[in-house]
Image (cartoon, rainbow, N blue to C red; front, side, top):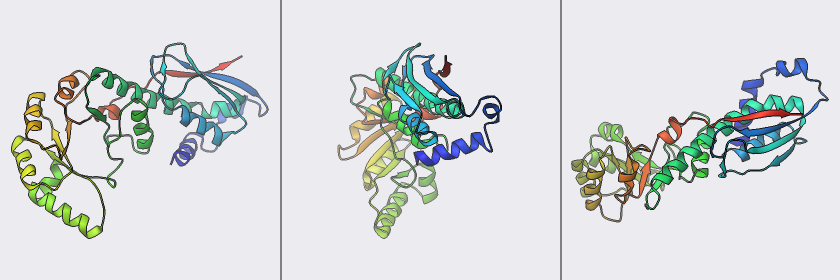
Amino acid sequence: MLDEFIRKSLQEDIGDGDHSTLACIPSEAIGKAQLLVKESGVLAGVEVAKRIYELVDPSLRLTFNKKDGDPIQVGDIVFEVIGSSRNILSTERLVLNCMQRMSGIATQTAQVLKVIEGCSTRILDTRKTTPGMRFLEKWAVKIGGGENHRFGLYDMIMLKDNHIDYAGGIKMAIEKTQAYLIQTGKKLKIEIEVRSISELDEVLENGGVDRIMLDNFTPEMLKGALAKIPSTYETEASGGITLENIRPYAETGVQFISIGALTHSVKSLDLSLKAQF
């Protein structure tokens, strides 16, 4: 998946040639560049950068001072690359785009975990990701200390509000899902979203699911709901939970909190690749 992404991204960027570089840089030119940190955070994307350079030009010489998950400060040098000046220039933007985006996600994830330090709650990402870059963004969440929710629509069943409404209600949604799993022979976890205590009661009355997502509950509502849910169910809170208000949610003891903003509203970390002489 990574190699395919790199090839497609380079084709998108280079097309029939990096003409800016081809126009003024001799083919035999050898250069050196350093990846400089211009904003503090948590580093991510080092392994991606390594693979980009390996695929484009295995003769490039790389020296890494930092690894994925390391804290970084302004002025740090993450790595140095020496080799074909043309290849260093042609890969510059892809390396930076991946590392800046991934480092921003890892940094934000680490900030969330710092706020809930001491709580047992685990932080999850969602499917609110950039198309084609989901695997990189979820990778960055893990580098930042978080965990991945389902990767896509195929590796877990999540019955959300629209599924429930289209299916004819909670009872019908669960029964149809159970029948589907028997019919197909698939062994997938079932998660169901509830929007109120009355919907929670209906789920508990029917059973047949593995995890209950409590959507847009306040911390007080969440605390009351958790008191009703047997330990046989996993519990997850979601909806409207931010860095500023997450601590009270985590203090309820809910097992998981999923946060779409880890990936969909992240600011890329400022990194720069600079030629050295």
